[in-house]
Image (cartoon, protein in one colour):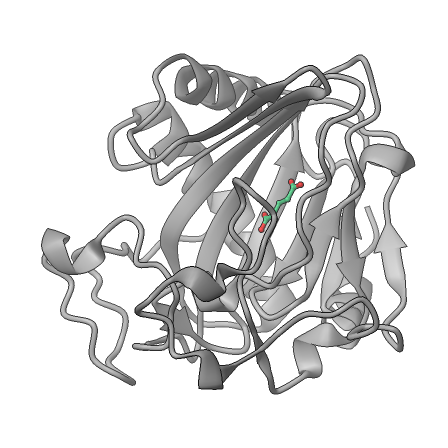
Length: 268
Ligand SMILES: O=C(O)CCC(=O)C(=O)O
């Protein structure tokens, strides 16, 4: 593994960083169990697309009901990594997503950034994407270099269809720029050769997606969303899922992270 200073520079310059061999064998076992639990007992928020080309499964926010997922998300060495990479004092857990792709012609993940899906803003907030299997470059996650520095919010996509989320009546479209074929023509697309146990860390503002899944081996990944120094609530989000307000979160612009819902985590 490269030293933390190099990784940090790469994250801040590019908006993402590939940390090779980060997970220990024990961490990988935990990852495997977490993904298996979620896929065998998914939440009502799951998205499943099955067709002759392949299968796409996505579910999220299971850490609140599955101790194995909670243990993984709260691993002190993960908290240590993300606080060091961002020079943050504090780190809170937002949620995790499980994404499983199988079949030889699975659809690509639409190009998007995560910030508009979330009720938090903050330039250091980031995700740690981890894989339980090796992933070849032609099926990998893709990140667009330097897009974390853009000020715009981009119109989210509907993951089930890959289309723009413009049909959502509550969306204030004036806030968002539509992603077109050439929107990121000046930002290099970077893909990865990933080994089981590698992680890719990227900011919530970094534009990313994936290549189509073109391997007979399933790609089982889990991504943890962390909040870091400077995180604040925002009302600029597209789809409040899970419905945090109904759960009791009072979403006020610029309010601090409500720690009773999004716990402060401890480092190694
Ligand atoms: O795993 C993927 O293909 C996409 C993951 C993703 O979009 C995310 O973690 O925000």
